[in-house]
Image 1 (cartoon, one colour):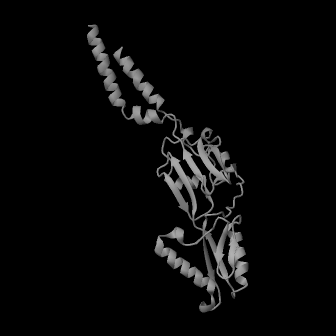
Image 2 (tube, one colour):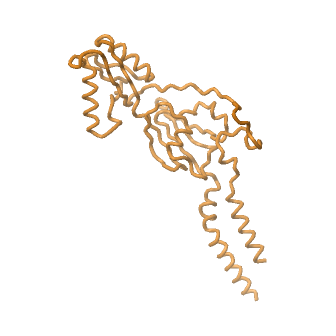
Image 3 (tube, helix red, strand yellow):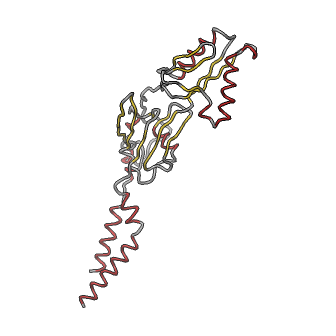
Length: 263
């Protein structure tokens, strides 16, 4: 009787902590039913949702000017160097640029304030290029967003805010930047909190389904918060699984005491 009970508790603990492979494999589409996938062939294709980030207030953008104008007369290049030198001395990469004010504008020497909010990075570059053409010979303007920022919390290796130089980051890439997911992360129910104007939207995505490629949330947006929950098996694996030998020993001692008392 004692052996049967011990086996029962052991089996209960083991099976309650088991997680099938389909809970771990990313972007599935009947892949588990195949014994072998074809090699060196295109199995499927997906059209990704178009995404171009548009500049908004409080963004920091790097603006660099170069031209054929002599240095002493190239006021735009001089301003770029002064800003870069001062900001580097302050504390880092994120300060190497122009802050978009609450009106969505950045300063441009001689020209004054230039509206950039609502424009893509390339549109801002074209706008500043046209203005520079009015004052300089053969100018080249390079614009880059510096503070593309999102936050990942929950069952990831490195929780926290991530600032990235590229303004086009997919959710799988963002998870990779956070060190990847823990073994018992729920990949089928990832929460995305997104700011849309004065509203906050909450969405859920499933990274186990290959159809995620068609999702409007394939790309992470500026200031997104990504929350990865644990699987339901996590408590069993963390507490019961790790302490299985202790639990079985305790049950064994308890059953021994009960058996001795009956005698």
